[in-house]
Image (cartoon, rainbow, N blue to C red; front, side, top):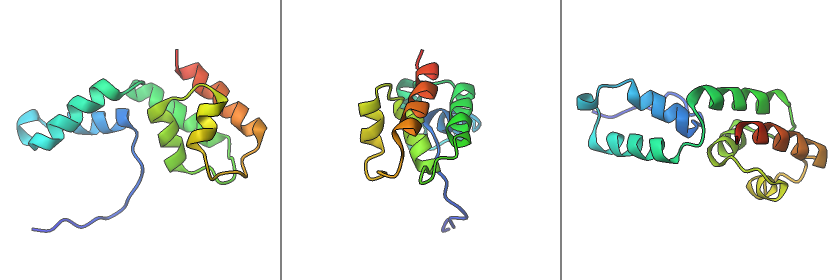
Length: 111
C-alpha cells in the first residue's frame, strides 16, 4: 500500500501535538509516539496561542512572508531582532518596521 500526498502545508509543533493526540495511543506507530513526546517537550506555546500567533503574523501581510516562515517563528519563538533576522535570512525585502512588528507580536506570546 502506498500513500499519496494530497497537499503539503507547514505545521507548528503545538499543532502537530494536537494532531497526534487525536489518535489513540494504541493506534499510533512507535515513531508517532516519539514525535508526540518530543512535541510536548519542545513546544513553547499552547495550540491556542500558536494559532493566535500565526494568525497575527499572517495578518501583517508582509510581502515575501510565507507560512513556512510564520511556522518557524512560532516553533522557535525568537524575541530579539537579531534572532528574527537570522531566521528570515534571504528575505532582505522585509523592512525594519515589519521586523519590529513581528518582534512585538512574538514578545506578546513569549511570556
